[in-house]
Length: 182
Image 1 (cartoon, rainbow, N blue to C red):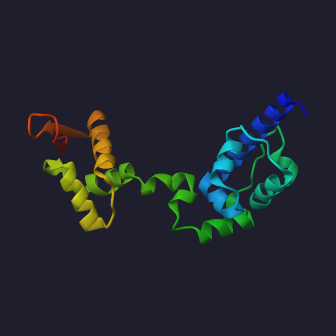
Image 2: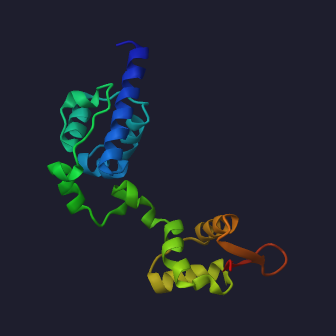
Image 3: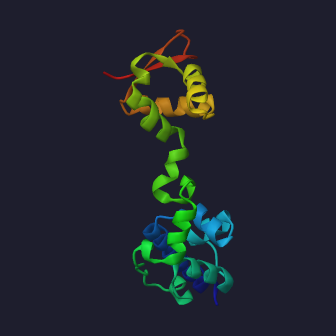
């Protein structure tokens, strides 16, 4: 196979893999766990940057309940409902507590998701809060340990999007207070 053909083949396989993952709702991390193929290798394949061995293609095909030639096909394969594919259904059942394995749930572990779904609805930000206080509160009340930097970055994004307001506590731009916009 020429370099150009290898490149085209890698792109086709990548598009097919991306489509299968999207249709099934399973993340690259989830597929890696299910097939024992490394996350990095699967990402490279999905991005169309790597050739794929028949062994790897076979593992992917088996998981999605398709013939191996589907993985190499230029025509995107339409999966039946994932609930009807035994391997995928079992994967969902066995991994319900692993949000990183599912595309729709990947964000649940993030600070962004946490602040939007847990803190803002409780009116925690009805009063001005500084990052350090927010971090300690989350750690004490929710047993989650996010870094001050992660929290600060997300609070600034929420300020930029108009959800929160921010004021300089000391006047030297080192400590900010965040509050829900009314």
